[in-house]
Length: 421
Image (cartoon, rainbow, N blue to C red):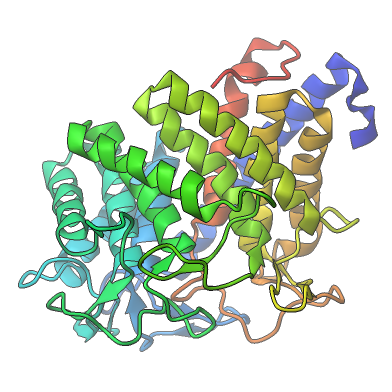
């Protein structure tokens, strides 16, 4: 059966069932890789780097984002798999996060620790705090461990006390260990050195949504609502539908780069946040915004089903690399668009994204996913399999989201076109 067979309800149902079972198997495959290759038996926690040839660097620094994303992935997956090994890995990740990354003196989390777990880069990057909240919230869901919820709530308080901009709203990027201003605010060398970024706001929103699920605090809910308005008022370009990426404190645009992966990721995360608040007016507003942003992301689709990386703002040049995380977000985001609109062209886009991953992104030699492919289709070279940024997050989350969205309909045996959010 091909995706052009979507016209009949029976064929759509069959494709959804195949999609569901494929990603369920892929989720277990991804997690199996991380269980086999990344636990650090010497220093504890998880090895900080594994190269593209699957060779571990046991002395590499360990990143807060890597550890927090491992914590999230195994916690979220356990709700689906009930695999005790997944719970065990989540427990290791939580204990290591609290024991080595949480700053007991000043609060927040270190950006990196060394291989043995000693503080290395002690800056307070709000992006990292957000992922620690995200991981701890998911861990609390499966364990009801009060230390996990307390850690998440405490980190939320640190973000609000130190990063929230009371004059213009939104969140400032980074600080020194003791929460003083810092010259270099960037997450990575390729980023603009600006006070506010789309990326950090998106993942603070994601983290706060997850925390609200386990701790429905009224003030937290108001901050989620404010974050959604930050996106609708400042971050989503009203004309193009793309996300703007960098801003000064007063929300003045500082970059014209378009990130197709972030477009399609935000399209579904914004709606998830609005739904968590159960505010019907806000939900309807964000449904329309989600559809607009999802449509904008299609500009980056190649004819092979892969989604390109970025378009440079100054000259309109498209970087035609196809990063693995971008394909994962396309799988979810285009499925979400189909659920909202009943437009089966978007179900086809989600399925084509999965086909592209299956054929070109999955690492058939070592397992897990490649970093990505160049514009000419060749594998991107000298890119980590495990590292500060290469984590079981986007790919496992894509599988988890698709499983959650399709399971009710696969079980019912009925041809389903739209999920009511």
